[in-house]
Length: 245
Image (tube, rainbow, N blue to C red; front, side, top):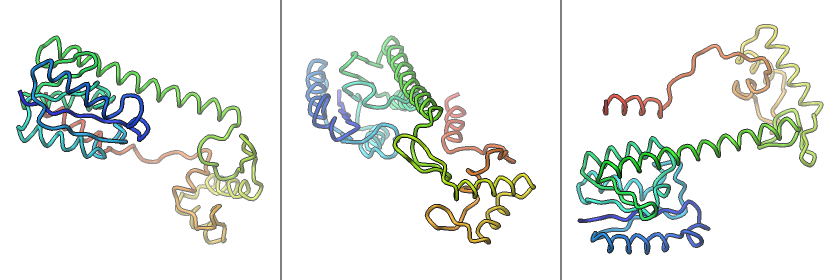
């Protein structure tokens, strides 16, 4: 059976250390020989994060080869080399199923050609998604804790300056924040507050004119007056669900 090897490292450091591209490629070749599979191409994404699929040219090429019918098996070193996003993995598995392509991994010995193999694949996809969300959750909680302690997190917000790891109020900028909030309490809309500040020659920290979005971040009691709109991911997920149901 014809197989394509896909290998990826998320950083340049990983590309030369740890589970490097070469390490992955050699392990995949040994696996293919053991399974009697003929590798016809090796596709790689070096120093590329798995977070944005369209940014991975190798991954896009892999999808093209699958749809062209040029391959019967995809071999990975491990499932996370493909993605940690469960939706991506399950959607890809459905694509592979449609084109009668098997997915194999060296680590964990996954093989989707059997029902048991698919179950193992689905469980791994779920565990990868859980790990991804746990990391995100822990990071958010750590940042929130630092904010409560008054430590600087990310960019310095308007109204403050940085002294060590602490934020210190800046009188001039605090006055601008107070003025913007006062105008909002008087019933002025974002656009009107923006025009008022710019008209009075009050500038941003960089000396530029204000935009409504920048003014919005100054308002402590701001309330959205519109419903959250749809996103590209949301629209794509809806179409995917309708297509596979």
